[in-house]
Image 1: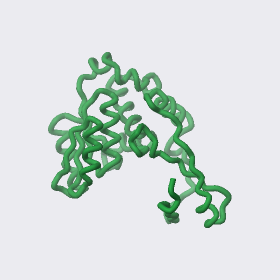
Image 2: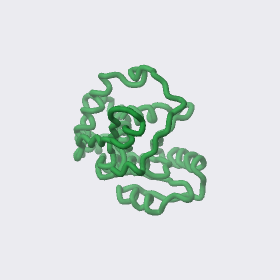
Image 3: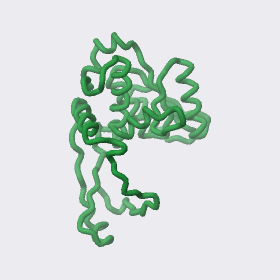
Amino acid sequence: MDESQIQFINNPRKTQKDPSIVISDEEIKTIRDFHKGISGYCCTPLCSLDKLAQELGVGKIWVKDESHRFGLNAFKALGVSYALGRYLGRELGLPIEKLSFDRLSSPEVKQKLGDKTFVTATDGNHGRGVAWAANQLGQKSVVFMPKGSSPLRLENIKKEGAEARITKYNYDDTVRHAYEYAEKIGGMVVQDTALPGYEEIPHWIMQG
């Protein structure tokens, strides 16, 4: 990791709230066990930023390097895979504790659930995570990207099995377009940002 590419920014909104308000120790164990069932899952490395620690006058700074995660160069697939697992589990009438990723991607489950299409709007890594997770589960995904998005990112998303395109809209309008498209085809929106009335899946993504 090149420390010259890292900047330190003080967060003015930082709080000391108890994290168990958002996620309990039991939920963390459940999520970790679910992720361990995904082919290619492994612990990503901690990198020591010695120069930055010296500049700030602290003993050590460690950064978890998620660029190795599932070959996707981002951590996004963790949250998405868990959210899709929770959603499919609910469709099956089973809690996530009784489901493995392998079982969710099995022909038996696919036959029971039929084809599902997961729809999202993204400018990059989230959409690639949705495409990857849906493909691993044997399901479809459609990814819309706002105008000006990188063609390389578009191709990377397509390589994960998604139907993907760059729209003529800005980001907010692309999100609206994704919702409209999902409603039209009977798909499920998988966004990592919450809106009034749409909070469950973003919450699962955040937990994962």
